[in-house]
Image (cartoon, rainbow, N blue to C red; front, side):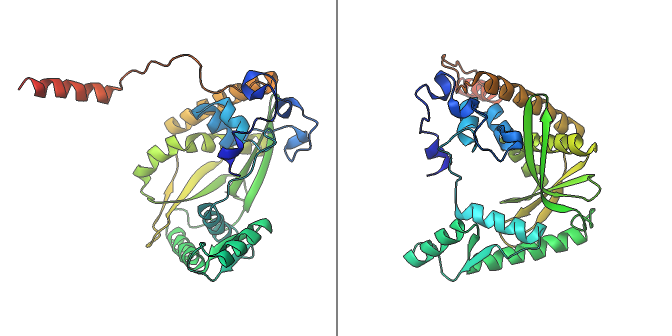
Length: 300
């Protein structure tokens, strides 16, 4: 069952919108989060702000008892690239000699690998990931930050508390002095200018702010946060991106808003979806300008 499918299952008679949910308010349930209390992550914070508390509830593995982590070949591929580049580790790969995943034997091998905590890859995908890693290492070596992978820890877990809210994050890589955080993203285009809209739409502004906040709370340092972008197709081009102060301020405000929404939902046990009143939409400025052009053209 995917996360989206799990979202349709109601664990309580009241439902997360209609009243308190036991899954949301019972903090005695076993939990990997700090002190057994469901913790706020950057992903959940983004859902709170960009969608609704209801979406955040359904996507949280400690709140939704029917949660199932979504599995996909794309996800396996991304995890494999992260492990190889950031950890230098292929031990969790499970390479399958097949053209695709359609045949029964290949599907069974893939499912068994996932069940064992491995990352299933077709042989051609493994070859591609290794080529990506070589390209990324060569890029970093001649970049402005040649020591980006020289020291530090990959997959670094952080837990901290903001008033009554427990927060957690897992950093792709953090330097030994805790002054730099690296986040590695594979994408269709590593053009920094193309990344702006993706950063806004995918919640990366909030992720950057959330991670900086965690490092400062845990280590008392204000780190530089750098994205390493890499294209998934040959020539596997890379770029390094960081946010300027204005972008960081937007992210900081988003995090504050998410913390407020989370605190309200956790205290009340009510995880509301979208407003129930009619939303009257206003035309954006560019659409109004286009309408004026149409009116002008119609009078020609």
